[in-house]
Length: 77
Length: 134
Image 1 (cartoon, rainbow over the protein chains, first blue to last red):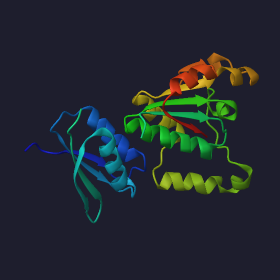
Image 2: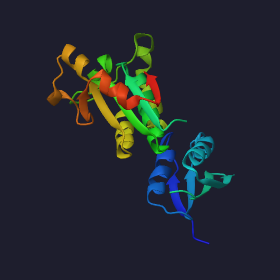
Image 3: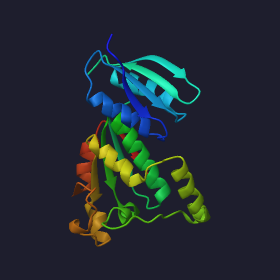
Image 4: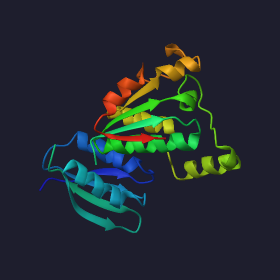
């Protein structure tokens, strides 16, 4: 299993986190795992919308005490 | 969602320009083709030089609170948002007719503006996509 690349968007307001995700996506290839850290409350819904639009997969959405963690698998480039 | 978002940015107040900035950046990050057609009062913020905060009369006394809230929440300026959108290929056009009316020459436009075009060009580029009038 490839190691997930961390996208640290903590502290960034919408649409910052989704932009960071899109930038990481630009430099990714099929099979890559991305792990986004964010604190903006809209990010859970936004990441799912992004994944649906771009044809990628959300593996996990988790609430840590200090952040929201979203794991994404790149299925489409 | 369509793969194209075209925004007609008509308003000159900063609150509405921020909305245009947020949607441009978000749509660009979602992989959409983004075009912003700036016309009339919107053009006042798209000429060279520092960008002033302009609020609608009824919310004028909320400027300081708005600025403070944006800083606290780490919200970028609309200018930075549009620059982010442009990083993903968004285009900013100035309306040629409104520029004429307001005596704005091509060289007066902020470098964020890609070109000065007419309504037909914008409509043709916006065809079959979502169009927002802000």
